[in-house]
Length: 174
Image (cartoon, rainbow, N blue to C red; front, side, top):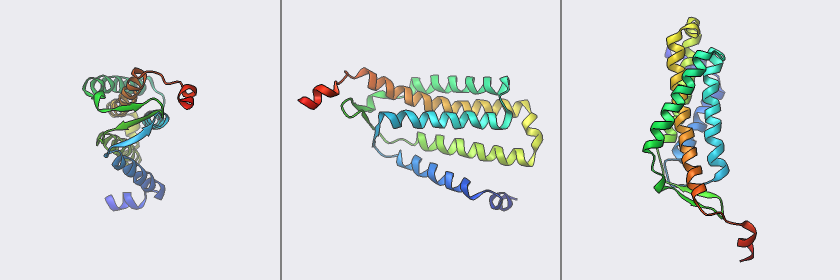
């Protein structure tokens, strides 16, 4: 059955998996990231996470509420354990030097594999779309992924905002 599932999976799904895997592995080493990119990626992954819920269960209050609760809980938990002192921000170039972390890889793979497993499960058992416990657990899980992404982005913005502002005009004259 597993082979049948894999052979019926469109090729673009494997391409997306490969891209997310490469992005996640790349973030396991220390890297320099611009302020814009460090904001766009978490927002994009949050949108994909929310889309994961809406695409299966629609915009039902139950699934959206559990997504929000999952996001809020994960945001609070991750924010309380994250280490901002390991992040360096250069206000002149608007870039961060970030230590390597396995967290993005786990999040990318988590969202991808959850979306894939849900797609396969609902294809094999369409009644799951109407199962409230399935909707609640998935809403919570997708929300948790988003909460961690948003906590990481918020942490970066806090580090950036804590730095003194650099006037680009003055620095170019110096």
